[in-house]
Amino acid sequence: MHPKAGTIMSLFHTTPGYISGEHLSRELGVSRSAVWKHMSALRKEGYCIEAFPSRGYRLVSSPDIINPYEVRTQLKDSRVGCRLKFSKLTASTNADAFRLAEEGAAEGTVVLADSQTGGKGRRGRVWSSPAGVNLYCSVILRPSIMPQEAPQLTFLSAVAAARAIELTTKLTPEIKWPNDLLVSGKKVAGLLNEMSAETDCINFVILGIGVNLNMSAELFPDDLRHPATSLLIESGVRVDRSLFTATMLNQLDRLYADFLAHGFGPVREEWQRRCNANGRQVLVNDSGTECTGGLFIGIDSDGAMLLRSDNDKLHRITCGDVRVI
Ligand code: BTN
Image (tube, rainbow, N blue to C red; front, side, top):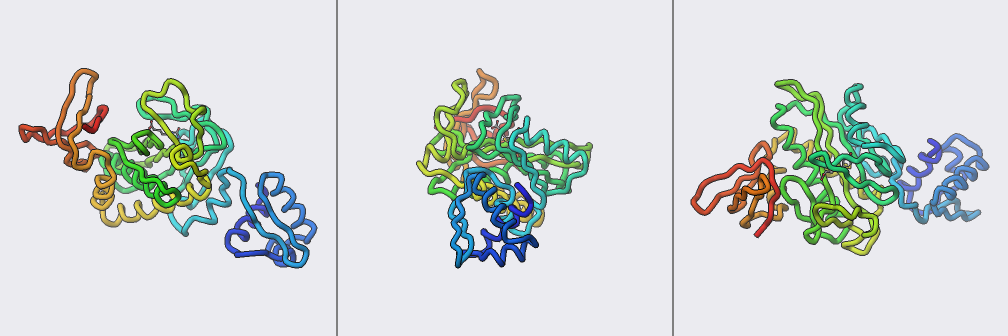
């Protein structure tokens, strides 16, 4: 998008009603016919813009694209989202963010893409990333914490994504340990943290967040290990992708500020409240044959799940497939 068109979008988002051609030409420092040309270009990109000779221009609707200008204008003046990088197509936003972080990108830089050819999932799996429907996002953080505390940050992104779903839809997501977001028991979002660290300090952490927003059932691959869904499938309503992105980044910013000021406690408490295993009996299949059962007690400071079995023994679970019974 042309930078002047970006300014027009910012003005549309901050000005209610019509904006006169004269005001726009003054704000942009261009002639009124140049304003008209920018409006035509925006209409070609799918924006519906009404023009009334006596009143000026009004934005009626935006296309279903993640537009960095629209995201930026809806972000609070905050650390997360201080820089936004957007591409239509990339291999993986996590890989891009990792490279940018190695090159010195600032904390809070966010990498967004409309589609990914090699979206990375946990345990070397592929994250299905078709164009025009979902959110693929990676955030660079540089916290002064010990490397073993880094898993705590995944819990921040899970809570931020859960809050964003609640704020933009009528759905109530649940979190499944370690960090899947479920709606009606099906996976709607996945999180992948990557880190560069020394023995005693973190250089940076990449929070990778993928949320299935407007994906239709036929776009899901056939070979999924667990049932998956999207917000559109569950609610029947399309999500405004830029609004969802900005809402989630604003929540992540608040959670991260809280984390730096007060530690892991507050986010751990909210995460546990939102967890599908909260107060329930679970079975963990840790190696394909071994099963551990018990009452879900909570999560440890390194993200391990704590279970109390019938004989009162406390178990720390660091990996495995969890089933609530
Ligand atoms: C999982 O397996 O559940 C984690 C999926 C994480 C996917 C997101 S999409 C944005 C970011 N870029 C990637 O390549 N992966 C993460």
